[in-house]
Length: 150
Image 1: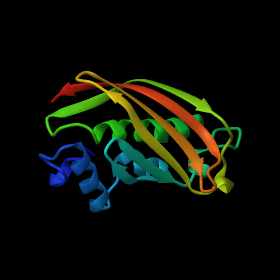
Image 2: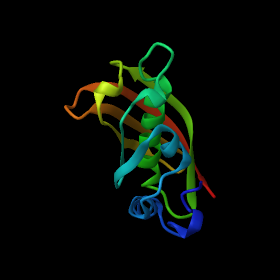
Image 3: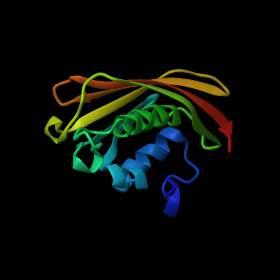
Image 4: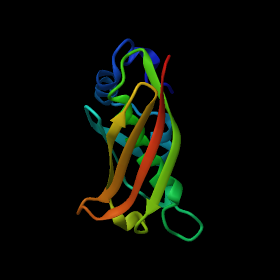
């Protein structure tokens, strides 16, 4: 599902589009699959929240690194998206993830917060942190993103 499907955010700049998407109460498919939501956006900032559980476990009985990476990548990407015009788009070129602590369903709600570090005409750099409700760090990431005209 594209975020502009069914008219959500068509013709809006990045920040307005993301706010419209939050207001719609909808999720992209990956949010349904991994049970997480875009919960907050601002200029150069985006936050996602989810509750890790058995649906995201690896065979060792802890949350798979892909869950960490998906929330961190989403936070970095949407932070950059918030800075774009209606005629711009982005794609991730690189994501470097560091895993600080294992997660299980007992971890409870986690929050990935992404922030733009710099953005130019063609390239943006962002970083994100993944924390629990008590502020304990579970993962962090840096991302390089390509910015282009649609």
